[in-house]
Amino acid sequence: MQVQGESSPADLWKMLQAWKPLSLNILPKTLRLSSSSPTRLPIKSFSCKMSSDSPPLTHSITLPSQLAEPVQIVAAPNISPSEFRSAIDSSLFKQWLKNMESESGVLSGGGLFLKRVLIQGVDMFEKRIGFLKFVADVIDKETGEKVPGIVFARGPAVAVLILLDSEGKTYAVLTEQVRIPVGRIILELPAGMLDDDKGDFLGTAIREVEEETGICLTQKDMVDLTAFLDESTGRRIFPSPGGCDEEISLFLYRGPVDKGIIEQLQGKETGLREHGELIKLRVVPYEKLWCTTADAKVLAALTLYERAKREGLLPPPEA
Image (cartoon, rainbow, N blue to C red; front, side, top):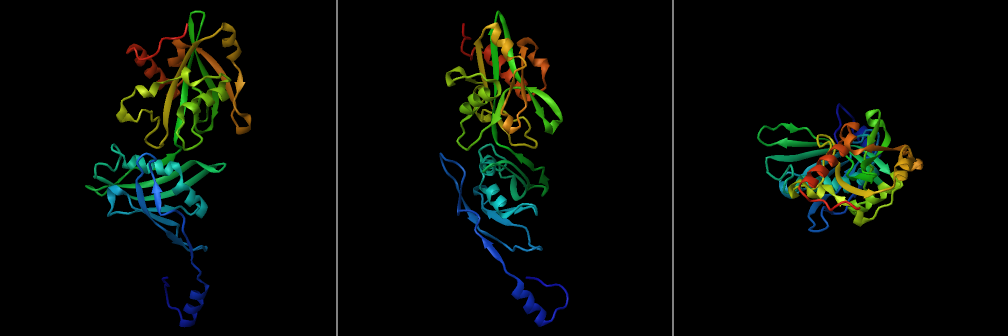
């Protein structure tokens, strides 16, 4: 403890009696990053003094790629101890570290190192973390300068391009949704986030289609369009890698329907209202889809679909 200015021995004794540090062991001694070939990272426990002038909560980890340079993890003043623990132990943070350490990761070449992570925001979805906001100080060893590292972590998601054939024409099913972050109502593909750490992209896609459109699909109905990407890409798309970790698997369903189904879907109100989903369906002629919306998921799915069709990679459409 440091005391600035002149103080008498009696004053110092009173201050020492009043000071009561509280130590918290927030994490287990190892952090598991991969279920297939686990990498265990030594974890140092941290301590904090819970008072009005407390220093920030801190934590330290050692990454295999930089054993001599432990990473300091710090909580912003608004982050509680429980939120700090949840953030460090979350699948979002573990996956981000795994990506950083991967073969094509930021730290793989040895020219950069991770010095510090500041946890700034934690948004809970019931008992799990839905969104995580942090700043990573990644340093260029050659120049000593920081690489921009503001991260909005929300994890993996799925989207489905639904094409319906009716009376010689093909239609795409879009959802019209209120999107507060951009301040607009957006036409986009049926989509959703993975609700757990199991990585069930296909199951999530089927569930989201039913919730948002009322269309019931099975696994055999679906084609993974992102599976056609080169293996080095991770076979998912990154819509905004400059600020967000979101990676999306894009799926395709194409099948024949009666004209009456098209009419029933047009303008249908769907979504989980209890979760604040205000969704209205829009059925768009396929030939107009490319210019109907600026949704990145639609445009990426269109590109993959057209290219895969041209290369003969898609199964023949149902009669």
